[in-house]
Image 1 (cartoon, rainbow, N blue to C red):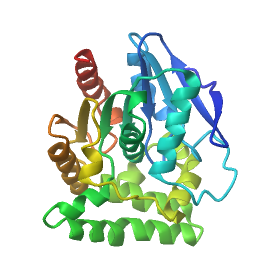
Image 2: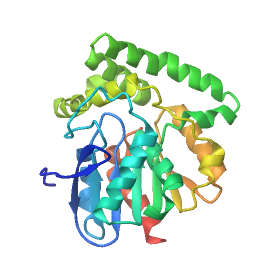
Image 3: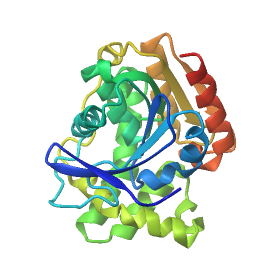
Image 4: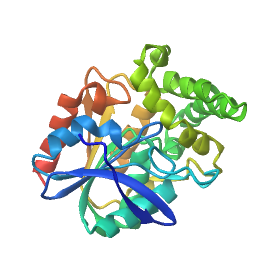
Length: 277
């Protein structure tokens, strides 16, 4: 996959992206600590039948980090996506979002439904949905106390690598970060400033309720990694309950980064879903 990125100016920012193939557009939206490079397996596969596009969200590599980034929010990223799709003239597009990027994609589908053909949501951290789940408030408190607050504290102390390690080990399992190859660590650290912006932001986890979810009218596929954090599975279950016409597909032998850990299985379920559109 060529690394020469194109760029487009939206909402006072320049966003880099790569595109390959032709046909119906499919936009891949990455999560925290990643960028458009993370979709290499998907770009290689989907470019054969689709106009495949992978975007790097605001503040993420290789976009310029022009300010403190305290406006880092899924809502703002959703508006960036909307402007991006409109600028490229690719609406309506299939949208595939992972983690925090999937959160932004869900918001996009409620604010700008005309831009969306279908949605694939991979473990979005819509933690406000847990408020309606028995034991959900405790899950939120545990996530904040055991993962997110320590991440924020590490970044406030200027220890970006420790903040990144706490987050990855908390979401994907203890010891995960230390097992990563050096090339993967380098790419992750390219996006450490974006995670610092997220950690310092005032609205990094905006409220998104079941009523908001029910405003999504387009077909939705929910994707989980078999070994992912329990909280993410519970959120997906609540999304499935609110949407009613969606289903959860579990990717085996994979955790939160299921699209990279088991790309063959991931690509297959997404292709099967899109084939029904």
